[in-house]
Length: 90
Figure 1 (cartoon, rainbow, N blue to C red):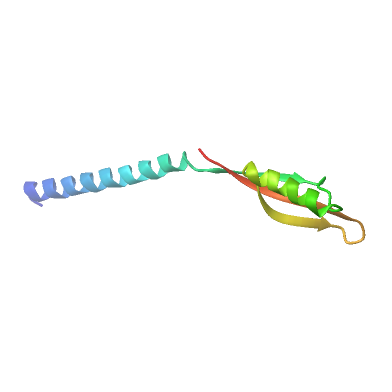
Figure 2 (tube, rainbow, N blue to C red):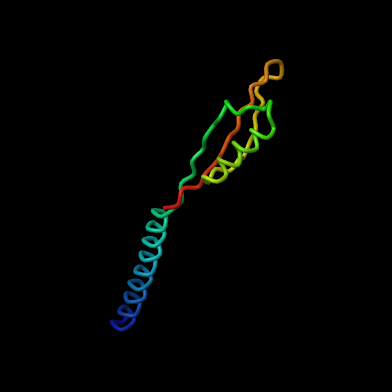
């Protein structure tokens, strides 16, 4: 290899290395701003009164909670659990 060919190869390798390093740093820094998800489990919501249940669910919705699952538990002795999710912004 001549000196000019080596210079071109080394320069191309250096530029490719800089681009790869920039892309890796950009990927790592974007992970720091990811959103967090919170979950909340409630077992005390009353199923007897539909209007009260609706009011309580609406209150959770107004504070950012989203109902994602209702688990009735054991079939012989059901204890409903309401599982809520909220996304916390960075």
